[in-house]
Length: 215
Ligand code: TYD
Image (tube, rainbow, N blue to C red; front, top):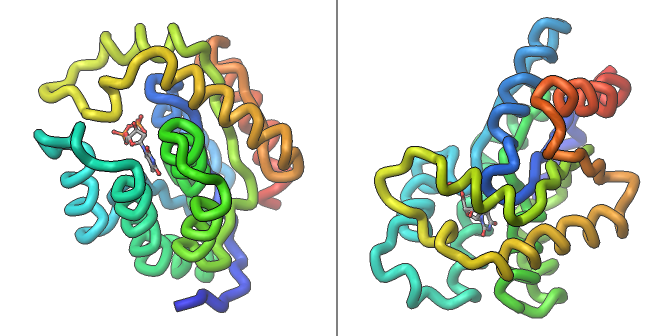
């Protein structure tokens, strides 16, 4: 079902590899926007709906996960997103809410397309089909060197290592470079932020980018 609303809210997606500090910065930006009087909704991918959480479970904690092929992975991530857009994001945008999305369609382009070598054209088509016309107004890439991502990941308290997180350094190099190439190709939508700076400096930089766009 194509979506046909002209949203009055804004969709801001956050991208970057694991351990880039997306969730910390999303929380900070949400607090800042709320202080400025805006209604904010934070969403998380994959998941964020009942159906999406079930799909997330299949992808992330499937004990035989290594056997899942890249095509299946792409279709599952985009299926979860299709549900999230129609059930949560589009209605919120129509109400004028600012939606902060922890990952969005660029994650599929980069992780499944570039990371797992799926052809760009079908990935883009499937991505577009899944989100309808709900594209981000702004995408913030928090860029960290792949070694930093891996080191931060290892410090994370986690009961089960996610299958995505067992990937090796080459995969993270591809992911990082993939985001940088995407951002370069679409400078009107993307902003790349240096994720090695302090939390405060990164938050300030993000706020500079966001404040004019949400007026
Ligand atoms: P998650 O546990 O949400 O962690 P993070 O804080 O790193 O986002 O991780 C979800 C994993 O799924 C992460 O390794 C990135 C990956 N992913 C994809 O490969 N494709 C996608 O489309 C999405 C949304 C996530």
